[in-house]
Length: 165
Image (cartoon, rainbow, N blue to C red):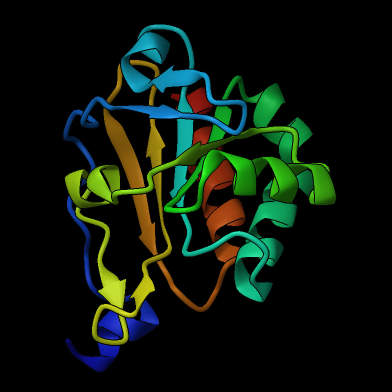
């Protein structure tokens, strides 16, 4: 693993133009979330983050929260994924008033399915955001471990571009 991997320069799987892999994971309430149920209905901003209640992840989640109405106006659903449990997600969402879905990928299977890299020799799960259109196709991917707020701005820009097409 090189410096670019740590800084976010390495490209994860699920490249733009490819169909987003389907999956099912429990949300903070323990209810099943299946990506394919959104196909044909709504774009999805699927963001993978390392851990609940850590400084960078809290900044990122609160960034999505603070811009949430912009995502709603663009018809998109925001979904966060980490290896934390549903109970941890429930506490994290309540503490920071997060209005969007958090999914528990406790075994890391969906992270692997999307090719989200780990950083620092596998010690820190990567921070990668996928913007998926209504048809279930990946339209934009951002891999940036250190610039958590950039994920929100680039997601909104990608959705805005899709809306104008």
